[in-house]
Image 1 (cartoon, rainbow, N blue to C red):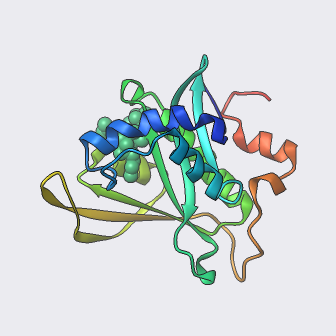
Image 2 (tube, helix red, strand yellow; image 1 turned 60 degrees about the vertical axis):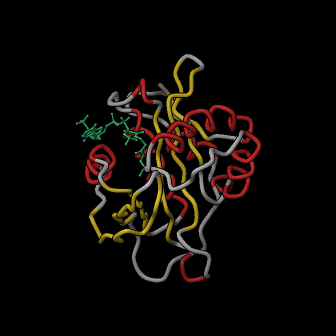
Length: 192
Ligand SMILES: CC(C)(COP(=O)(O)OP(=O)(O)OC[C@H]1O[C@@H](n2cnc3c(N)ncnc32)[C@H](O)[C@@H]1OP(=O)(O)O)[C@@H](O)C(=O)NCCC(=O)NCCS
């Protein structure tokens, strides 16, 4: 398995992984799965400031993780929201952890200070993944979404990314030196 930056060309694979979670679960609060074109627009809208990452093996996309702005007002610029989706037939094989490890490393290197994740409750796998990655529970919005005939709570988790004091401007992933980017993308034991 390797983790790499996604591009808009990857939107069909990303849309395919995401669609069943939209259609059959309340993990996502969307009700209509975005098609590949809409997913390409989402990737293009946040890259390269907020990375999208793919995990793949032998040409198969196993999962993806991405960051996007936590909120749009200027003072939020160092806070990123993160999310991760893994193909159901590849769960519990370290794909989600690998994607998040790389995503959090990249965000820290770019100069982001805090990562946030909202999780529709209950979601034992996502909560365990986030807490295992150092996220701490912040609080819960009760009955904040209505989908599939019932109301749902969303818990929020937060993780510091390092750095102190006044922040420098955030760098995009394309601002990173190619050798630094390659080092950040490499999984343990992987040489690039
Ligand atoms: C949450 C999700 C991304 C985890 O990805 P994954 O590749 O299956 O997870 P990993 O194999 O990397 O597991 C990493 C850790 O997460 C936790 N975890 C993962 N799946 C779990 C499960 N079903 N139950 C409890 N803990 C689980 C464990 O702590 C695990 O470490 P361990 O295997 O050493 O015990 C995956 O279950 C998924 O895609 N779920 C649907 C989408 C989703 O909920 N995304 C998060 C939106 S907030």
